[in-house]
Image (cartoon, rainbow, N blue to C red; front, side, top):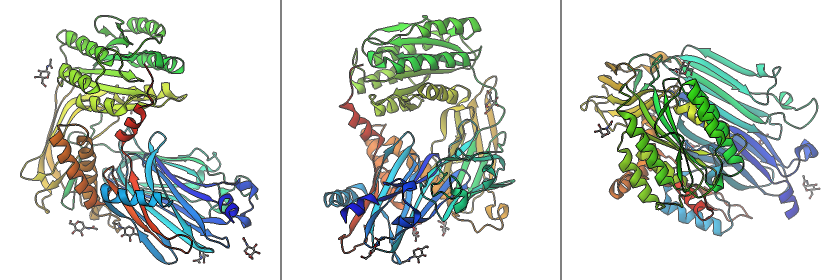
Amino acid sequence: MLLLLWSFFSVIILSLADGASFASRIEDDSDPEAVPRSLQTVEVHSVSVHCTVASRFAHTVMTSSASNKANSSQEILFEVELPKTAFITNFSMEMDGQVFIGKVDGKQKAGQQYDRAVSKGQTAGLVKASGRKMEKFSVSVNVAANSNVTFVLTYEELLQRKFGQYEILTRINPKQLVQNFQIVADIYEPQGIAFVDAHGTFLSNELLPLVEKTVTDNKAHVLFSPTLDQQRACPGCEASLIHGDFIIKYDVKRAAGLGDIQVVNGYFVHFFSPPDLPRVPKNVVFVIDRSGSMSGTKIQQTREAMLAILQDLHHEDHFGLIQFDNNVLQWKDSLTKATTENVKEAMMYVMTIRHKGSTNINEAVLRAVDMLRKDRHVLTETRVDMIILLTDGMPNSGESSLPRIQQNVLRAIRGNMSLFCLGFGNNVDYAFLDVMAKQNQGLARRIYEASDASLQLQGFFEEVGTPLLSEVDLRYPDNAVESLTTHHFSHLFNGSEVVVAGRLSHNHLDDFLVEVQADGREKDFRAQGRARGAQWDVIYPDQDYVFGNFSERLWAYLTLRQLLATSELGSPEEKSEATARALEMSLKYSFVTPLTSMVVTKPETEEDPGGRLVANKLTEGRKARGREGASLWG
Ligand SMILES: *[C@@H]1O[C@H](CO)[C@@H](O)[C@H](O)[C@H]1NC(C)=O
Ligand SMILES: *[C@@H]1O[C@H](CO)[C@@H](O)[C@H](O)[C@H]1NC(C)=O
Ligand SMILES: *[C@@H]1O[C@H](CO)[C@@H](O)[C@H](O)[C@H]1NC(C)=O
Ligand SMILES: *[C@@H]1O[C@H](CO)[C@@H](O)[C@H](O)[C@H]1NC(C)=O
Ligand SMILES: *[C@@H]1O[C@H](CO)[C@@H](O)[C@H](O)[C@H]1NC(C)=O
Ligand SMILES: *[C@@H]1O[C@H](CO)[C@@H](O)[C@H](O)[C@H]1NC(C)=O
């Protein structure tokens, strides 16, 4: 009996990555090709992923139904991967006509229930990191003989524009032929859709027509719904060819000037990314860790990336190179213009970088700040000053107290330049880098130790390498809007987008003044105009619109993201206030965040006394700190 349970144990994984990306996979302990369809005791008869996007706000529902065809009850596990930037907002399961719905609760309360569930040996849903940009959510339930179970998971997120497009990626690997298999995306963008591209890595050119795509001016519909036969890896065989990524990419038609403002149901959202702006030259200092731990592949990949990045510099950019271990070495004392000759010379220098010694982050970053400050007066026209720090370890030479390094760097930079931090591999304290970057108008990224690390580094540089505007300030009248999200941004980079949302003071207000000011290249950017409510029911007349209050949820999502960020920065008072507000919003809008959990009361069966399932989300900080103990020298 036990043997049977284990050998036919099935896993259903629907996973999501990058932006609004989905993946779905059904794993079976046994090789599916070796198990004829008739003998499979867990049959998945439907898998559907339905994503609805309203003005970049993506609402995704994943549904999966399976039958336990065995004579006895068995566990069926539902496992989903979703983007780290998304919040789970609902989960339910249906068995024997009964529906069990998840409820978002404060962590304290839910945590105890989770611990109890775990100590009783029950599986509990836990959202934890999985791979680069995904988190895994899993729930398992005991299903009676010859019964069905249906899982429904919903999550929401704001798609972020990167490299000039929004991306919805679905990783699918059902490992079983599925009677009803469907990926559907409906995209509503009142600004107009510039292009939509949909393809699957597993689809050969002859199968590509299976992807249906309908695009009208402000609406797109993508459908991928292969029949059982079309899913077969070869005629007559039971293996599925569907495994890999299904990717939808799109961009909107962007308006010049103010950008696009939408007013719906008492909330507004403002998207700003004007086309055709000239690039602003940059002063960039690369600060590269060459401590002992970088030895081998990492230092080689860093050299490779630096060679490509240097070649991508624009002639009017200025740059500096600093390598550090316990010593800090500069290529040149001052910034150098990125002429062809200088870049060549710098490339020769990069090729000589070798690993050795320990890690003095403090001294290296302060040196970079000095370099940028010293040359400031010489370069009069508008420029963007940035430091890009690449490190793979903990500071263990010179100043090594993390808070003191943060304090020193903050004091030296004084808001005058941006610090971007790249944490290479698992031995960095990512939370430390993340806070330090955010305190200094920048952002942090993880670089994963893998064969594509060099491409990850280049990709990051490509993302921030073309500043178009700095000190972007978006203004709205105090008497018309309240509860604004962040409306000042240090930079606008090419291919990205600035988003601000807020609540209107009066529900029926739909016409107010909006101003944008920013430092641009030759002249400063100024735009002024009136926001006018777009009539969604006029633009989409035949649409019984799925989540009419998307503007409110979009605002709630952005506010919550920013509160969660503040709860890790700021003073102790700011932190606790942000935490309290974030908890309140998570509960009100039913978002599973690091502060909340989702509790599902698990149905009772004869063998399973029932209990509660709790979905928990671990925080980035906790994971990072967990790694500290494992950190090596360098
Ligand atoms: C169900 O039970 C019957 C009788 O106990 C047995 O003969 C049969 O093989 C079982 N079927 C499966 C799929 O386990
Ligand atoms: C959650 O899902 C259940 C079942 O699908 C549904 O009845 C309920 O209204 C949903 N809750 C929310 C807040 O959308
Ligand atoms: C389980 O689902 C299958 C397929 O939808 C259906 O044919 C069957 O009647 C269902 N069984 C029960 C017990 O509901
Ligand atoms: C911004 O990126 C687009 C492609 O995404 C490119 O066509 C354009 O030239 C870039 N603008 C600048 C100023 O580099
Ligand atoms: C640096 O920032 C401070 C405060 O933000 C500002 O007063 C000062 O003018 C800036 N200095 C330079 C050189 O930009
Ligand atoms: C949207 O919000 C308004 C005001 O808060 C509320 O009256 C309405 O019922 C909501 N509509 C939906 C579909 O939730």
